[in-house]
Image (cartoon, rainbow, N blue to C red; front, side):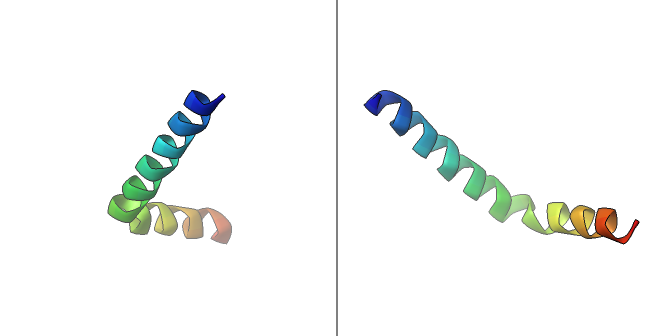
Length: 36
């Protein structure tokens, strides 16, 4: 259980880092989808 929680935490940190690097691109694409 602890191992699973630990891997989820690592995944969360990885996604946060990924979003910092590419967040503006994702945000722009999301806004474009909302306009349609």
